Figure 1 (cartoon, rainbow over the protein chains, first blue to last red):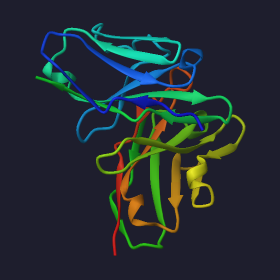
Figure 2 (spheres, each protein chain N blue to C red; figure 1 turned 135 degrees about the vertical axis):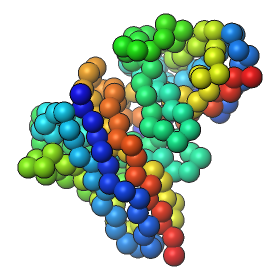
Figure 3 (spheres, rainbow over the protein chains, first blue to last red; figure 1 turned 90 degrees about the horizontal axis):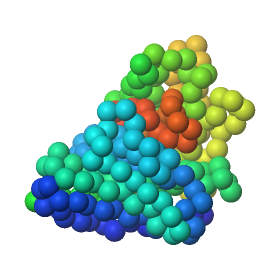
Length: 108
Length: 119
């Protein structure tokens, strides 16, 4: 089955840029979606189809996908961005959905 | 606006079954593919499977094959997920989630249902 790997955690200073990576075999050939999950809440999609931002998501969130790595970038990080972030793809080989292992982002 | 409202927390003994419900409002259940995702305490998101109303098929993640059943009651717009032969490592928050906008993206989630398996 398809596996998505993320670094467990990263810290970013307020106002700086955080880059969260999601590794998978030839992930650049798939569409990657990113979710933000704050403590005790359900996930919310922040980027879909590699780089599209749903309505209501700040422009500070952006995404890219190429080769074996997809990246979610949070520019000008704010305290409210502290959350767990998950990448997700649809595996067409078996019609299954796969989540990455998740990255905990701390803003300090 | 689509909303998913799930049933309340459950406590079950090992070996028992649990059935979690997810009621849809703002849409008709037959229009929505309903997915189930779980999250063990301190762990990541795990896709369990889904019912696709377009072809009437249910797909389960291999890990749950034989133990999970996803059903729907279209008369009440309610989806159900039943997990049997519960073990302690089934303790988790169970979410229903659906796709309204872009394909393959879970843009609407229920609030989650905590299932605790303990003797």
